[in-house]
Image (cartoon, rainbow over all chains, first blue to last red; front, side, top):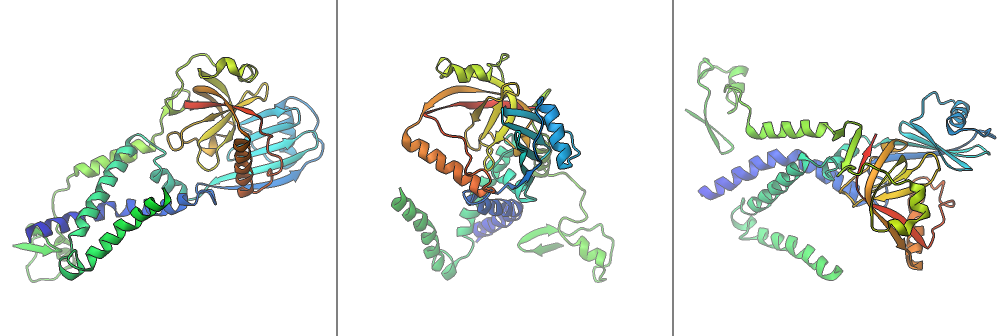
Amino acid sequence: MRWRRAIVAIHRDVGYLVAGLTVVYAISGIAVNHVADWNPNYVIRTVERHIGDVPEGPAPVVAATVLERLGIDEAPTSAVRMGPGELRIFLDGRSLKVTLPGGRVVDEIVRRRPVLFQLNFLHLNHGKGIWTLVADLYAAALLALALTGIFIVPGRKGLGGRGRWLLLAGIVLPLLYVILAT
Amino acid sequence: MVHQHNGFVAPLDSSSGTSEHAFSLEKTFNQVPWRGQTMRTHPIATLLTLAIVALAVPVLAADGTVYGDGVTLEKATPITELLENPAAYDGKTIRVDGVITGVCKKRGCWVQITDPDTGKGVRIKVEDGVIVFPLESMGHPASAQGTFRVIHLTAEQKQKIAEHRAKEHAAEGGHEACESEPIGDTVVVIQGTGAIIR
């Protein structure tokens, strides 16, 4: 039938077009679905260190002393006195929380999760702007895939047979959950 | 002559100049429907290219990266003033300047902006997903704008906040789990609409 050939063609071409993006959304979807249990974007490592008593002084001076004792040869982005007993030193991808004058340092090192950070950036549309349009087009493409997919296979394996029951199961399952959970 | 492949019907490239029966890699390659035709840029390819280019360029202002609606107020309210007289600013649109000393680690849904001269800070909370602050913005100078709010907490809310903080700390090393800041009866927050991070 001519109409079936048309939907097969649509399903095939749209499928090829959005396959890559579907992989992106699927992987990121699993990652952010469990955000309560882990950080899907960053690996954060904290190390506690002790550098002994630190002499009082202005924040930049104290920061220089701390960095020298830790052997960090990097100019800080900033150093902020959070209170009389605490100095925060910010470096690129790293922050030091220094307890004064005792010299206890909580060294927090942050790095992006390779690949996953970028996948989440796309999936969660952190970039906004034109990606919102791309995401809308992708959603429309998924809709086209779903609707054409239903009619691809004729006969017993299609809507005339088990396809009908699988389609119903896919609709009833989320519907049942919404009824029970809300 | 037509070549049929997976239901796709297209004229064969007639410019290959090879014998119809002679097998050659070149001919086989040229029989792929899209081969041998003049290269033209498809509108969708153009659109995708533009999208990628646009994404590669962050929204940069002259003096920093703009988040959300940015900052339109010219004058900042000192954070110390906000903390000393919170009722006077409740519900007002204000701007604060300072250094970012805290960022929501999982969702980027808030930043703490601290006045480096006093060490006093205020949290700017944004709607989840609408603005996402990068963790790399820690320590950078920033300005933020939004509606200042004084929130009176119930005992239940205080408990929930304490549990949430403890859980967050434990999930990321647990070093500070037992030294979280005490939670008062009221908290102040700026419901942020925009920021500029330098």
